[in-house]
Image 1 (spheres, rainbow, N blue to C red):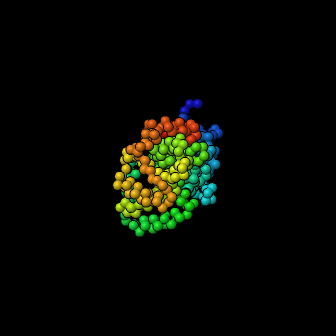
Image 2 (image 1 turned 90 degrees about the vertical axis):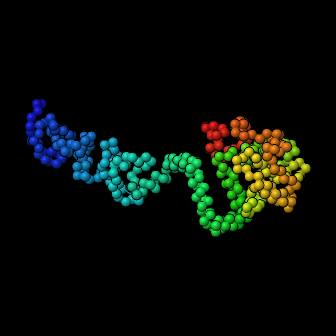
Image 3 (image 1 turned 120 degrees about the vertical axis):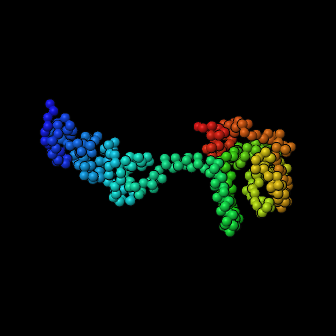
Length: 341
């Protein structure tokens, strides 16, 4: 058909405009036409129903059903929402709705945060992000400074917490639960449980302790070994408490209190260690324990125990893991010593 000037009312706004037929945009059923202004507003919406198009032109919100039906084309369009959580009616921008990653249901802007933070995907993503941020040296230093500043400015709170903890430690159930929690909360140290002579699982908190347990399992002079479940009070600048490592029962029924430490450890404080050892020797006198053993790389048993560090400990951990002899405390340690599965 040759181009000619005609006068036709727009099917939407009924405005009569005289234009050439080649500049008109056909829509829906011939011979209905739409003017340029309406055509620009309804761009990419030729497959929409007439009712939905009229809503766009009148700046009325779409229903949730219409939004789902025409989602790829609904940019910057109001959408009517009847929230499935609070049951309140509200409107939202379609562009913001399409940007939602975790929630694709009919939820208002007020409830979206609560709904999003309850999804398993968001929890996993947020957990990984928090671990990444909290593991940076800057954030660790900031956290440590904040804690130190708080205790320095609130000594009464610190003393109240200390007294409350001492009181609660009288309960054996709470004491065991607390000890297990602090032992397993070591993301950067090798820690877990070792199956001793196929009878009992014993906690270890370092590579040296694991090496000691492996050595003790093959030592026929040792009848039994268990993790210490008590604290020893000692004085170093102030009154402190520490948890020794193991109680060893020998074949002749004598007992030894064992503390394992590496003198190569970057936080090794000889004065503090001496204070601990002095308190431990006083402790065993009144608790039916015949000997105190402080085992380091310089101890006569060190060669037999064969303490391992860094790369050497990995081969031991992998070997014990294949035999189902040990468990590791967390995923980071499994990835580091065994490899990602």
